Length: 475
Image (cartoon, rainbow, N blue to C red):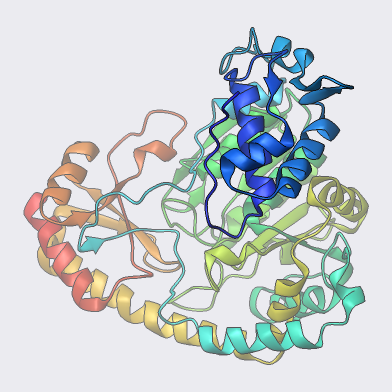
């Protein structure tokens, strides 16, 4: 028989190309079960290759069971393979999902996707300042760590993270955020999202009542929804989470006290103490997501809630995604001492450990003082951006909006004083080359009024001014 097999000049060996083409024809049904294949000598002559090439391809097909040899007769397509393909069609298997799988399949997940059409003035939020980050220094540190790392350190690492990095994180948190811990309580994770997932796995049973901010971070809500938790939304006002509305029977409360997401409000000391008292009364846990705690522009920063905790009730979460760069995917979880073994084991079960080489580099980046210097530059840069934003809002929007979130972080929220439709504002701004974002998707209950979320970490001052001018035409 004549067997047409395209052979190309490439880095793939000829026998491998021949094997793959014949295998593909068998799986697709082009070569039915029981079909006799050409002799290796004939096939080699047809294709203009040596017989050795054909022999090697046939041997691989025989080894994998795609063909069978019959002594004195030749080589035939296996009938078992062909029979298994008769009823097969794409997506024909009806596979069941677990309860977690069902919940996850319905979740809002921000998968990486093709960027929406480019607009010159994009107030995107949740981003790091890539222009300010010292990538040249980072590359030198990473290369140095790669060169000097002994082979044994490139084997599986400790689940809790690199010891040097945990020490560096501990020292930094003590100085900058008044976190009270030692390195043994720090667990290095793949970003704060994994930390939230570990909290749900370790502390929450299906059906448990948990308190969340409303509006609040969608990544937290989706993790809890997938875990089967019963979420009780607690309203957020101008002072952050309203502790008077906390449910007494909740097992865990999730909060962003340093710069509430998304409203940007800061939880005052009195409410922080009330929240800790609530946790004490109900034997509950407080999860403090300090995603934006490094950036504060007015007065002295409030210390972390973890630093106020005297009973070991606060799980503290932080990330380098906002201060270094998002693709690094390194964050940390500071657990109460009693919970460290459970969180460490959960981390091991999830993915064993976070990438080792990057941990070494980050440990050196922090220990040599580069991280602190970088933070100071970002704070200065963000201060200038923030001032440009506030001045532009005053100039082009005046009394038409109120602002929250301008005292910390890298985003603010505009609250129009007259009723508007978020989607209409977003669409009208986009038609003028400006991309802004609505706050309503972050509510569990229906929002009382529209809000426009503006990030500025990756914008230049002139872009901020022009973008707000165009937004002023819309509002």
